[in-house]
Length: 139
Image (cartoon, rainbow, N blue to C red):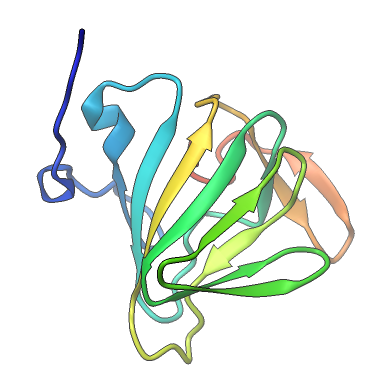
């Protein structure tokens, strides 16, 4: 049996990100699911790029504030207490708009936790290129 309790305050933020990212599943020793907590101030993007996953299902649960998630068909405003889900192959980009009144906090969950599964998506050309580090290393 194995158990872990992880406080997000005890997990150091990842360097070089457009917003605060704390990798909770890594700190808990989990290998099959990626769980990350993001905090984005107004104008900050959550993942590194507009992207999609080949295998991973990804969900963003908004803890506070409002996340804006762009897809090729629609832009979603996801309020606190709501979940946005993307199936494999579904391009999306989450961010906190620059005109937002407050930060947004999001719990991102992705499974399976697959390295190199994130691919950049260019909505202008509707073509994509494999990137591996386009999003956030799994969720």
